[in-house]
Length: 159
Image (tube, one colour):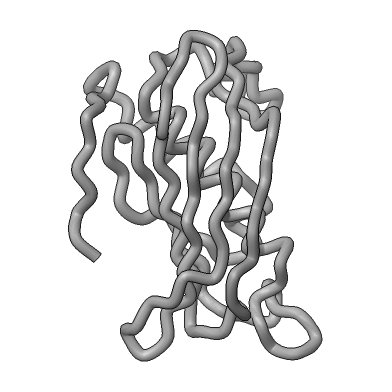
């Protein structure tokens, strides 16, 4: 994959650090073995290695695991464009599965299509990687809403 062109910029110098810290507090993604990949303004990759934690009865990646990283990559891409003190939540989500999810890992590439003051439209394309070859297995269109960040009860800081 070539590095995507981005027409956006980070809102501050702390954005990448904040994104990484927030990702590392997402228990479900960490439990599944997901990792944060490339972070650019309006663009994020999430990598998910294949394991028995994320497959289904035929050995493919489970559709729920695929949908989870689609949602998260789009949401985090939207978060790269907002200042500290706010966050985003998914308000709408449509995913099309276009091929079986067979591979060594999944790569979700979320990007902002249209940012807004309240709603941001994003897209996530999910690829299965096997033997260094990527196959598109799903694409999702998502709408995010900007909300004030909630306090993290365990860490006592703003997410």
